[in-house]
Image 1 (cartoon, one colour):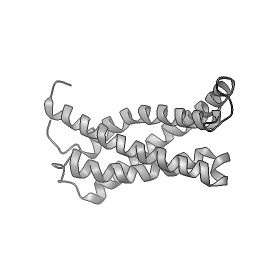
Image 2: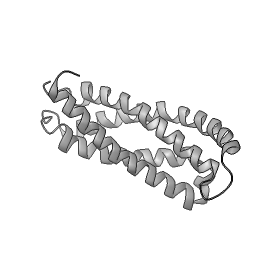
Image 3: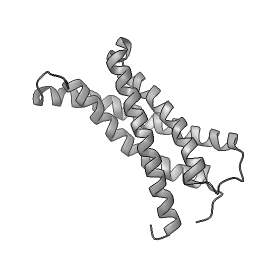
Image 4: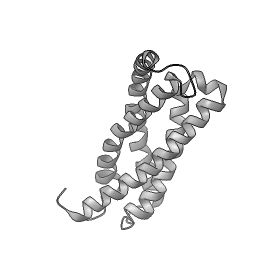
Length: 152
């Protein structure tokens, strides 16, 4: 990225994404540790944690990353951001499901049972991978669709 405005936007988008990732990880781990249903159904926990992170990301991206994007109504931008996010969730969920099983099997032979079980480690590793993967999709899609009214 040679354009300094776009580079700044990407850095802000990544910071907002890091805050969203903290929300995503925090909610995911609270659900999978303290709600028995989600211990066995981590895919639903990651969908809920993702949704809460999306609300945070939209708010901060609108206010901080793209404050100059105001030619569209907030509702239109929210719908566009939500569509991009749902597509991101559709990308992320099957990858998470595949990685979850693979990493649990892998980590079960590497880590002994203890405070951080192979399942906890695998869940968080899978979540980290899918968050990073979907961030690229989210930035490109939101920059060129949701926030296409800002100049480069």
